[in-house]
Length: 97
Image (cartoon, rainbow, N blue to C red; front, side, top):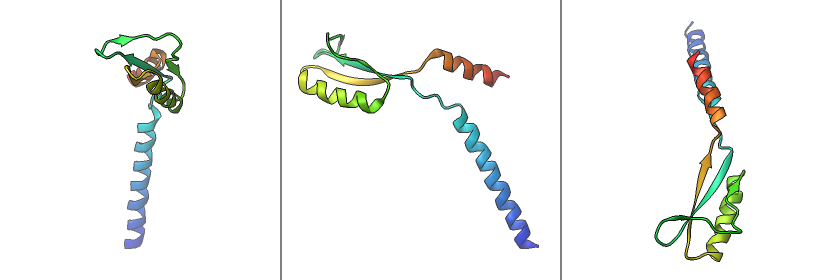
C-alpha cells in the first residue's frame, strides 16, 4: 500500500512541475533584433557611416563589435535587444482572457 501511495505522490509532483514549466516558458518573448549602440569618448551616442548596427543573431553582433573595437578605438559599443510591440500585445491579450 505504501509503495502505491509513494508512486501516486511522485507522479502527481512530476505532473504539477511539468505543467508549471510549460506555463512559464509558453510566454517567453525572444528578441527579434539586436542593435549595436555606439558611444564616443564623452559618452554621447553617435552614428558612424559604414557601421552596421542591426543584426538578427546575437553572436554575429558580438563578432562585429569586436571588429569595430579594433577599427574605432576611441568609441565604445554596447548591444541592445529589440522586441516587436505586436508580440507583446498578443501576449497581453491572452493574459486578460
